[in-house]
Length: 396
View 1 (cartoon, rainbow, N blue to C red):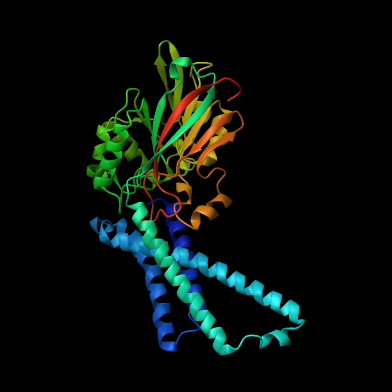
View 2: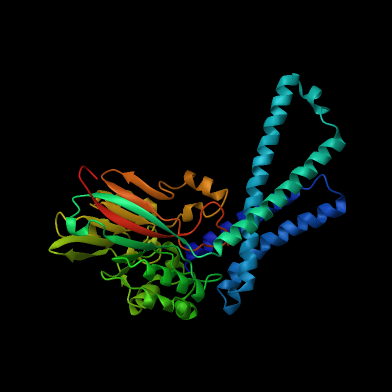
């Protein structure tokens, strides 16, 4: 395993378990001592389950099926609970500050709330947090298990030849075939894509979470994915966690065109567009020659032909547009995947979901066609995206 992954795993696990310990220690004060111990032990046990799941997942066949489903469900449930804990504690601090400010002294506010009433209120808050997290997790699970909806998007492209007006590209991204998503789910995705009869298919990374020998049977339905102008793939960060080079080689055997900082030209009635693709934003950490390079991807491309660029992470979008792309198709964010993460993700990503204008081009970020980790899609449903190119009369 790559050293950076080991370091990240150690840090992330330490933070996760530390946070679980903090929440467990600071919660359930309103319950009886015995119930308090039980609830705190439950929180810590739930926090350990996804850690065990991820460790076992790299060791063999026990990393798939029921164990990871339970472990990742626990991760989602606790992450929602942790956010709720933070919000309620911050709100409580604000209320105390306001009461203290209005009363004029700490002494005057100290006895403002009777201890028995405070315990009752604390029990209510903790019970609401637990119940709310469980309800949201179950609702999100039901959404995650469904095949994605089809999202139709029209994109106006300046200089698009008339022959390509109405050209359709179906985008799949972030399927994450692996611990909890298998062959049956991918077969459903492929069948739905074929039913859309696109001109081209774009798979923008994070297709898998596992090594080629373990997942080859599960990804084999991709051999049935077809379109007149080809099926194109670019790597996401997760491919490199599981041997990116091996996955690129294997996907080529299934008929996918893997774009490693390169392009292809599509022609219709003498008119041309370019489909290009770059490697993942962080690929160079694992495979130095896979450092993303939009300029290299477009080297030798016909001048004046509109460019559609595939790039897994939205962080790459600006560089792609600066290099000449008119439309950049991305994934990676999952749209935050589930509430309330779909609100927090806006703090760390330049583009989160949907179509956005960027300089002289457009960026479309798919919410993803599967999920990673927690089987939860509440508030950010998965999607298969059908993109229709339209000729723009003005600057597009």
